[in-house]
Image (cartoon, rainbow, N blue to C red; front, top):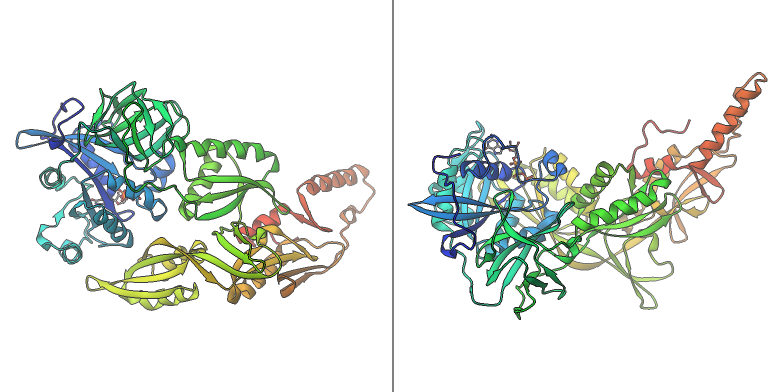
Length: 616
Ligand SMILES: Nc1nc2c(ncn2[C@@H]2O[C@H](COP(=O)(O)OP(=O)(O)OP(=O)(O)O)[C@@H](O)[C@H]2O)c(=O)[nH]1
């Protein structure tokens, strides 16, 4: 704790003149959580004894992976020139999948600390978040972090930042979240330069929900920023998007543990608990008002979370299907963006088609299912949403390639994104090659500082969801960073490639790809399956097809499979055992037409794992 920390904060309902609401925007790993931790410690709201790394990141996965998924708000007292201020720090998620949550967190603030790693400089997400902050008219405080690092080059990057946002390089504050150096000065600057919140205390109450978190014991905890008026405990509140009403059971501030208060008034940031059990009833971006004296105009900017990436999730052990359903039902309570519906697959059995905000979201959900609910899952290749118009002018929305309509297709459109990639200039060539291979078209590029370039591309989202980021990282030795935003649909020459075993399509392997890439996909999958599927009593052709046209073919030749051949003598018990074992094995076999395929083969083919599981 700093000697300047103030023990007591004025009671809730502070005069807005003494409130400062701010957030920290940064590229992933530039040290936002560490700086937030240091602020908590310096202002004395978390004692040195209770301090643990990344105090604000509550989910285990967040802490382990070192990423922030859900934003949180915390109130800290800080004194400047004899006056105590309430600083509300709103932690924002840093990843592209959660842009909407970032933008809501920003809308709850008057200012933002733009945090840049002094050894890395500005990155793609720094820029994306900075633009969002500027759109929200926030006061920006530029800060270079990690100046304790030997590799830090603050002079160079201060110039880079000044070049970007204007102002003088020497005004860029230099701090170390790790050692605490410069953090007190930063808190002073927050008080001195970020405007106090404004609002009408006498108007009907309006509060913006910037976060909504499910807590197993307390139900949904809703984080709000009061814009106008006042909310008090026991009041009946109303959500403006749905008109649903709830009673406020508890209202308070996080400092950082939840502390009940007598209410929240203009400019304040805090939480509400109403006893609802599903975050969908208390959605990020919605406006809270009161039932008795409702506001007439909702705060602007509310949008429903929209899934962009779909994948089928199947339990590896079919008897886990009810558990998977239960687990998804539970996760839904805390994640308003997760959607799912039951689906069946010839190859994989019963499962769910799930929709996610993006790839990271998909990864987080599958990991939580496996870890928190002990499920073994297989995920089918991620797909985006396609709009398919058939020759008879019907339009279908396809999120699962196996639903792609047969017959004559008039047009197919796919979601497009505007991608920005920031990288050292030496990598421009290799990045362009990668993006062109992914059907990207270059919109322009510009220098950031003297040795780095930001490239702007139009690209199909479907090309990004397949390992694009991994390729980008490996081609640039990890130096490139990526950010993208959806910009609507565009028509493209897309086809469905089916993979057939003895003439029968295996649904889990159908894919929607660009015509130019159909052949490569067909060859890849037929070769993979040839390695994985055991020989049968008859020849099994493996084909890739677009409609009725075969574009690639492999074949597994017949073998007479005699399990008893190995038992030379006449040991009957041994024979019986083997037969039993074979029966056991059959249970895990899937029939595709006449072909018996072990489920493991499908799983290995989907995960691209052809090692170690070769047919015997
Ligand atoms: N040397 C040094 N390392 C730091 C400093 N601040 C953070 N780090 C390290 O940088 C890494 C990333 O820090 P985090 O605080 O997790 O970064 P973040 O920006 O919160 O990351 P996300 O939550 O994923 O966006 C960690 O290994 C920190 O220990 C600093 O001032 N100096």
